[in-house]
Structures are given as structure tokens and as C-alpha cells.
Image 1 (cartoon, rainbow, N blue to C red):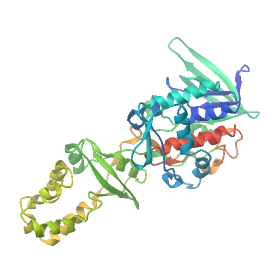
Image 2 (image 1 turned 120 degrees about the horizontal axis):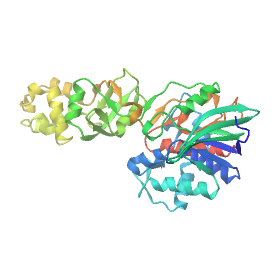
Image 3 (image 1 turned 90 degrees about the vertical axis):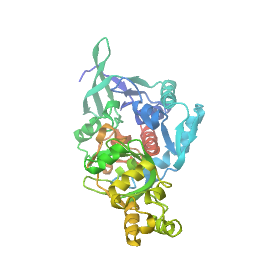
Image 4 (image 1 turned 60 degrees about the horizontal axis):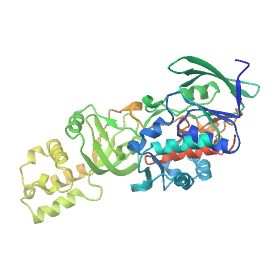
Length: 407
């Protein structure tokens, strides 16, 4: 390693939500901080999140909203830095925001407001930020981390040599590689003999290859409020049919609990026992067709596809001519529609990566590796995954704060 390496109090790999916030937290405490971001722009994932409005946190943060092999790990960091703490920062920068359903907070104008806030804070506290910086070598010697980083610009390519007693891995994970997602953080973890748990795409749409795929194609763009259950976990929210399968908030949520080979159960009318409802209408309006009854409760296009799938032979038969057993069977089917996804859309569209650096190796209070002094992991690279709705950003802020305060 070059003997003329530039020295910093802390070097952070990753200029996303966690990396920038950790830099701010440490620099506020007088630390000389360097952020190395491999892409050409800071906070790319922030910019695309929430449809470009950034769902930056949630009013109702609870440890139960996070998945990890150690369900207790997230508690310390979340208690150190709350959603209200981040909201106060947003308000101090006069960023307009709004609360949507389930306590989700979004920028009113643009996700750029959040990135600009973070960059402004970094500038205020003299954080050094370098983009287009790919760190190729990380070594540890004499209690110092020695880094060799390739800086690529339009004009030339240079090698940067840096060193620090503190190295923070905020590289994100495998989700959305076009926005800079990679497994580099896992490579560093393995370099220092840390275990990485099983990884899979999370908060991600489902794909179907059977007859359901055709139904989804026909219904592409149609949404409906449903209840979806998988592995004893249930969410109620909108489902969205796509040309490849199923998406929408409820599917993204349940995908975190689904594993290859699992089936999911969709209740198309969560608050209604359809068999009882249809039998009641049979008494009062026996001449109605079933599709007419259901079209008052869900999109007509969806009813048409369900008719083709489940009751084509009875399609033109008034409900008064249906037996109660037929009604009960169909009603129960629509309240418990069992589907088996063939896969998910994978990391290409996944909002998060499930799994990560095993938290058994990490201090829950500081995010420092227990047996490797000065090495920290924060954000998505760790085995902590939040539900949809601002929880993953809050984990980024909280874990970054915990690490930044320990540097």
C-alpha cells in the first residue's frame, strides 16, 4: 500500500442514505470523514424511492416491522434515533412532507429534497465526498484500514490511497443493481471472517408461469384491496396485476415471508364472507347473475376473469338456481384463493435484500464488529429488513446514527 496514503478519522464506503447520514453524525462530532461512492451520483436509491417522493420514514416504527435472524438486534439503534428525530431534521430544512396511510411519510415535492438535505449537512460539517470511486483493495494492518480506490472521471483514471482507524461499510445490497446495488459489502464481511446469512430478493413482485400468468396479463393495471397470507403472516392492502404476475403493496409486503415453493392465499373480499353474502342476495334477488353481484364489490375485469376460471358453466344461471353448496364452495374459494408463484422478479426490481451480514457478529449498540476493532456495518448490508412503508430508511438513519456516534 502507498506510504503517502491520506489519513481520515473515518472512511465510509457508500454514499447512500446510511453512508451520508453516518458521515454527518460523525462529522458533527469533529471527525474528519471521507465518503467513497462508486456511482456517479449520491443517493440514487433515495431518488427513486416512493415513486420519486421518498417514503423517508414512518410515524409508527416498531421492532416488529423488521425481519432478522435476531429479532432483538434492531431495538437499540431504533431507540437511539427515532422517526421523530429524522422528521425534526426534515422540518429544520423546510422540506414539505405529507403523511399517507399507515403512517408513511413522503416528500411533497421530490426525493431530491432529502438528498440535498444530506449533502448540505455533509458540506456544513466538511465531509469529503468522492463519487465514481471503486474501492478495489481493503487491508488491515497495525490497527489501520488501508484502502486503494480507483477514481474514474471522463478525463482520466487515478488511484487514491487512504487510511483510517475506522471503516464503515454502507454499500447497500443486491437489490436494484442499476442503482448501484452490489454484493461488495458481503465480500468485505467474508474477508474478515463474518458470516453472511441466506440472501433473497425482498419487497418484490411475484411471477407466474401457469394459467394465472394469462389472467394477470389480461388484468394488467387492475388493482383491488385484498388480504394476502403466507407462512402464517397476513397483510391487507392493494394488489396490482401486471403482465408478469402480481405486485402492489400487499404483494411486496408478503414477499418477505415467501420462499420458493410456497403458496399464498388471497382473500378477495377481506371484510365479507362471500358465501353468506351471496346466499343473502339469493333470497332477495334470485334472478341476478353472480357476476352482477360481484361487480358491485370488485373490478368488473377481475370478475370476468374469475368467472372464466371458477364458474364458467354456471355463468348464465341466475343465483336463485345455484345450490347453497355451490355458493359456499365458490365463496370460500374467493375468500381463500390459493396461488403458487413460480418465482419473484428478483433483485432487478426488489426494493430490498433479505438477509445479510449475520448480526451475531455485530454490536447492536454501535454497529461495530465485535471481534474486529474499527469495522462497522450499517443499513441494508446487515441482516435487518424492514416492511414496506419507510421502515428500511429508518433503519438506515438509525444504524448510521449508532455507528456515527461511536466513531
